Amino acid sequence: MGKGDFKTRRGAREGADGSAAAAGVGAGPGGGGGRGCASRPPRAAPSRPSRACAVGAAPFLGGVPPAHAKCTCARDAHAPHTCLTGAAAADMDEMVAAMVLTSLSCSPVLQSPPAGDSASRAPCDPWKESGDVSDSGSSTTSGHWSGGSSDASGAGGSPKHSSEAPGSPPRDDGFDTDCDPLLLAEPAPRKRKNSLRVLYKCLWPGCGKVLRSIVGIKRHVRTQHLGDGADSEQRKREEDFYYTEMQVKEEAAVEPTASPTSPSAPAGLQGKLEVPLPEAPLPEVPGSALSQSAPSSFWHIQADHAYQALPSIQIPVSPHIFTSISWATATSTLPSLSPVRSRSLSFSEPQPATPLLKSHLIVTSPPRVSLGARKVRGEAKKCRKVYGIEHRDQWCTACRWKKACQRFLD
DNA sequence: ACTGCCGGGTA
DNA sequence: TACCCGGCAGT
Ligand SMILES: [Zn+2]
View 1 (cartoon, rainbow, N blue to C red):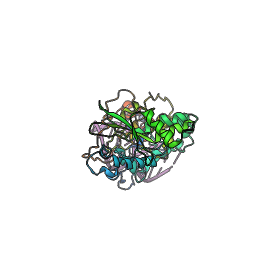
View 2: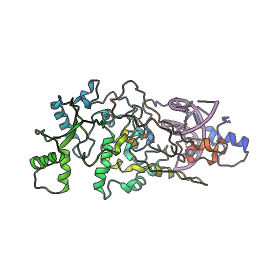
View 3: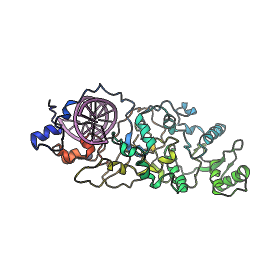
View 4: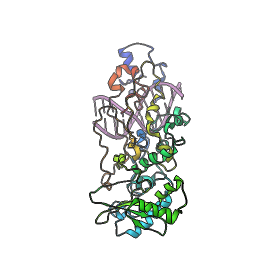
């Protein structure tokens, strides 16, 4: 019966326009179904960062309570990492060793600190969607309400993003460039003080030598552990894995930054890293997908065309230039992108200063445990506002379906 | 009150 | 797969 909702287009339209056929093909369909739905989905934790996408980013938002993860030492109020102060050198050794093992290859080095929570939780529970995000990497941004399948299937997805894709030739770049940002994005709270001393510590089991110059440490690793003869770059790269860079302050605050590529990746870009908001998990970087995720920097654009099959105009999506990173936070908290991204990143135009980008340093403020945030809700005017309910037929498909608007991304 | 959109339902 | 809507969450 009439779902008298004013909102429905049918209602509105008929009333107002009176134009008959209009888009609504099936006259009756709508009404019926309906609401049989069950009460409400247990969305609590799940609200995911969703698209944010950003790749990661997300979009950059951790719906999950950060509680569980944490590094072993976390128990102190302090930030996990911080705990390794100079004094705790010994500890650090172990920790570092562990890190190295775990992430011998390009993996997230850091599952430690803030990342701790995100990292550890990544594997488990969370939302199905999240899986989606990280996994397919392709779908990401747009949550793909369902239709996502189009490209989600992967076939579509990969090709597109593959421009920078992992598999592609530029492995080299991929490694350095992609990886780093990602990695860093996760963990690294990095602080920079004026008078920090940077030391390089050899991570080779049993060694532990500390040198002040990067060259020195490299040489040390190469000659003492890897064997000098080698040549290839590979060796070279490996060197990176066997030493870590730490910045020592007077008190000896150490900062285990990602060792690999420390030199090459100056983090300068990563300025924002993640946003440790508990709420916005953003797409994490599951180790496995790592290689893939990295490249997926620009996906969301594509995503939209997926359904955008609207007759009439298509409207340019607008700038997609952004850097990427955002979601690294997984994530979502973003969120995002993920951001989450989460949503993902975004900027289309006037970006209202989003509260993104906070200090990364923080140790995580405990107080706010807001649960899964639902996304941030874009600010941009969406079809509904722009065209008005009266002209629902001009809305983008997503809007008509009450999904995330694809025409005006935020 | 409205808007944006997730999750889920119907066809 | 296409379409739609309940209902939640943020403004
Ligand atoms: Zn729209």
